[in-house]
Image (cartoon, rainbow, N blue to C red; front, side, top):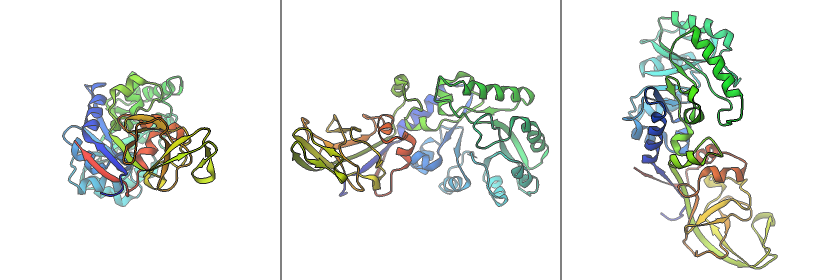
Amino acid sequence: MARAATVTIDLDAIVHNYRLAKSLAPDQQALAVIKADAYGHGAVTVARKLQSEVDAFAVACIEEAVELRVAGIRKPILLLEGFFTADELNYISEQNLWTAVHSDHQIDAIASSNVSKPIDVWIKIDTGMHRLGFAPDEFMAAYERLKALPQVGNLVMMSHFSSADDLTSPVTQAQLEVFDALQAQCPIPMSIANSAGTLMHNRARRNWQRPGIMLYGSSPFSDQPALDAQLKPAMTLTSEIIAIHDLQAGDAVGYSGTFVCDQPTRVGTVAMGYADGYPRQAKTGTPVIVNGQRTRIIGRVSMDMLTVDLTGLDAGLGSKVELWGKHLLANEVAPWADTISYTLFTGITRRVHRKVKG
C-alpha cells in the first residue's frame, strides 16, 4: 500500500451499538438501517456481521436490497422508500422483502399484482415531516384497502420524526399525539423511533425501532456527552504527514492564501483531500489528531492534500493523522464543515484504502 489515506471499519463497534439500541427497548424489535451502503461502512460487510443479531434490516430502495440478497443475506429487509414501479412487486414477494406504502398509487399497484406470496406492508403516515406518507385523515381508508387485499400480509404503521434530535422542540410530541390517535383506531404494530427516538424519547419506542446513525457510533445529538460515551465509533479515517515546511510570520498557506501565519509556524501536509471524501468546506481550525496530539487544519482543503499546524508538536514525516474516528468524533469535525456526520461517512470515495476488523 502506497498512499496512506485509509478508512478502518470496526464491525464489533456496530454490533455493540445495535445491542445498545435493543437494550433500550428489550421487549421490542429493531431494524438495523443499512441504507446508503450502511452509511458508508459497507452494507454487505455490515449485514453479514449483524445477520445473527438483528430482527430485520432496512434499506432505502430495491437496488440496495438486491445487493444484500445476492450476497446471501436472508433476514427480512424493509424498503423504507417503498417500491417505485409495479414490476418490483414479484421480486419483493419472492425475496421476503417488506415495503413501505405511502400513496394510493402503490396500493393500486399491489391490488393489480399477481404476487406469489403476500407482501408485508408498512403503511407510512405523514405526522408532520411532510415528505412521504398518507395524511392522518387518509390513513384509515388506506389501511382498510390494504387489509382487504389478498396480496398483503402483515401490516405495520410507521412514521418518521422531523425534529427528534432537538429535545427542546414541541414537534416530536405533536407527532406522537397524531400517531397515538391513529393507533387507537387501528391497533397494529407501530414504528416511529429513529436513532434519536430510540436513544432519548421513551414514548417513541414502539414495536419496531429503526436505529440508523447510532449503529455507526455517531449520536444524532450535538450536546449529549453521555450518549457519546455509550456509542462506539465504527469508522476511523486516517492518513499521514507527507511533507513539513517551517514558515515565517506573513507566509500564506494553500490555495488563495486564506491562512497567513502570524508567527513562525511548522506546517504539515497530509495525504487527504476532497477527492477522498474529506469536506472541502472544512475551515481553518477544524480539529485533527497528529501522532496522538490534537491540532488544527490550516488553509483550504485541496483535492488530494490538506495542511495542519504542527507548531510545538512531537511529529514528523510519516506521523499518523486521524481525521475522525475513535479519538476524534465525526460529530466534532462536521460543524467545522457546516455539515453532519452522515455526510462525512457516506462521502468517503473508493480511492481511500479500506480495512475491516471485527
